[in-house]
Image (tube, rainbow, N blue to C red; front, side):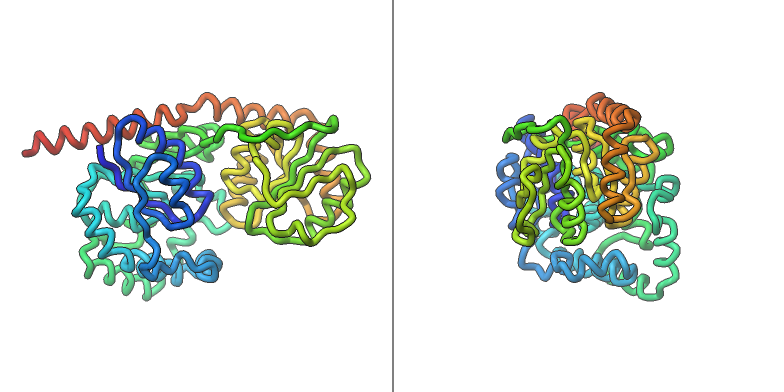
Length: 395
């Protein structure tokens, strides 16, 4: 079977797909992965054929644009349409050349979904965040329903929809683009237990659990309690890191900090605190007793997979949804502020109150009991076979 796969230029959306891509290619399927040069090596190492989306005036690569998207819905729609149309000629040519049997696209790589609609190709959504519908959207500060209401009221949106229609995309409105319904075949990289309102999704949603890569390095556990701190690659809150160093410098804890490019900002760091630009996060989490995290879906899932309770410091509405669900399941505690006292209090509670460890272990168990990559491969393979059979019967 031949699969065209589309993703956005983001590590958090690309990395979870790679294990599944590798398993599909090892099963004999051909995958043509539409992505961006920075991900070429990873994608090719997973066995897929890389197709570059670079050089097509693709505005979603611009970091300034990415920052504005979350705040300006009209701009977000315009950017989505402009990006889709920038790729249109190349994608159309490749689709006509490759004749894929199915298209798989990240839930926010809307140009993949639109290509499936335009060319009449069966579609599967790949969702690396929580799946969202009108029930689970309440976990977002600015939920999907509220966003859509705002979008409908914007005259500019109709103008953008017309741009797509003129290029042959059969869309009636913004809902056709941004919302998957219960008839959309969807792979979700979390468990039913961790997914908010999972009982409101149809059986076309396959909750396969997070994609956890093997441990590559080893980290020595040097103290009875190990605290891991990582705020992802975007957060550069120097005050937060300084407060953590001050708070934990007087303790017996082993503290491992993955700080990105912030590492050159701090001198005279206490001996019990290890600062790195990056670490093998799986290796650190395998020895950690608490994880201070920005609640990115991948990082939170990795911590919970290892049964590590989380100290929650979300930075975006999506991360806040992860934090909210983690709190609900008793697997983490939200920081009340970034003061030294608040950080120390949160870590103390996480370490001393056994219920947090128990909550994290319940989530971990749900991840390990999900169908995983094996279920996803089985689903995609059988879905593709049905499409091929249906096509033969219609001839």
